[in-house]
Amino acid sequence: MSRPDGETVEETTVFEPRFGPDGLIAAIVADAATAEILMLAWMNRDALALTLETGDAHFWSRSRQKLWRKGESSGEVFAVLEVLTDCDQDALMLRVEPRGVGAACHTGRRSCFYRALDPASPGMLVFRNARRLIER
Amino acid sequence: MSRPDGETVEETTVFEPRFGPDGLIAAIVADAATAEILMLAWMNRDALALTLETGDAHFWSRSRQKLWRKGESSGEVFAVLEVLTDCDQDALMLRVEPRGVGAACHTGRRSCFYRALDPASPGMLVFRNARRLIER
Image (cartoon, rainbow over all chains, first blue to last red; front, side, top):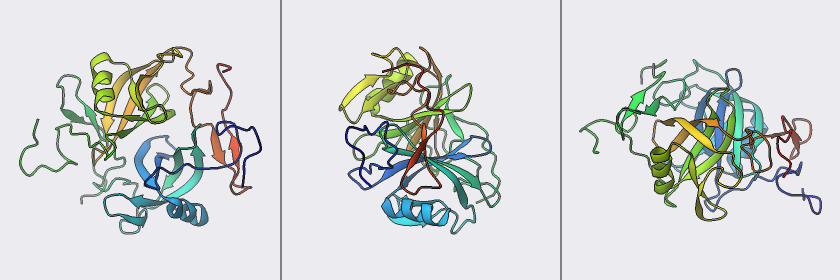
C-alpha cells in the first residue's frame, strides 16, 4: 500500500517497516501484562509475515542464520497481542503473552536482561532478577 | 578486562559489549520510573563511553552518521540510571530519567512507539498515546 502524497513516515497510518541493509529490523519484546522487557530479537520480512499470520512470534536468528519460531524447541512460545512501530518505522515492539513457564531467555531466565553494569566497578556486571525458571 | 577461563558470555560478570559489523549495538531506552519504552537507539564505542563518563545518554545517529548527545538540541536529555546487557551481550537496555518536558521522540511525543498495527486492517496503523507534549 502506498502512502498518501505529502504524508511523512512519522504521521502515516500505512505500515511500512524499514528493514536494514541486512534485511533485518530490530524487535523489542515486552511482556504485555507486566511491561517487562524480555528480549531484543531480529525479524526479516518472512519472520514478520509469519508472526502476523500465525500470531506466534517468529524471528531471524543472526547467529544461526535461520528463521526461527520462538519456542519451537523450548516450548517458550510468545503469543503476540500487539505490534508497534516507532516514528521512523525502523524498529518494532511486540507486546506478547509468554506461554510455557515464562522463561523467555535461552539461559532459562524470564528476561535476557538479567545483568547490569556495576556502578562501583567499571567494566563489571552484577546479576539482577537472574533466577532461572529452568535449568539448562 | 578478560574473562576467566571457561566462563560463558551468558554467565560472566565481565562487560564485553558485542558491537555489530557496522560498529553499533542496539540500545533499548526505558523510563526508569514507569518502565515505558521510549525509543530504540544505536551506540558505537564512543557513544557508550561518553554515556558512562557523563551519565547522559549519547547515541550514534544512523541517518545523520554522527555521534549525538540525546537532547543536545531539544533539551530532552536522558539521565542514565542503569545500563543492562542481554545474555549474548549484543543488546543493551538503558533505564533513564527523562529531563526536559519528557518528549523523548523527535515528533514531540513521550515515546517513539505511538502507533500499532491495526488488527482490523492489515498493513494499517492506529495511533496510541500519541499526544504531543511539544508541537514540532
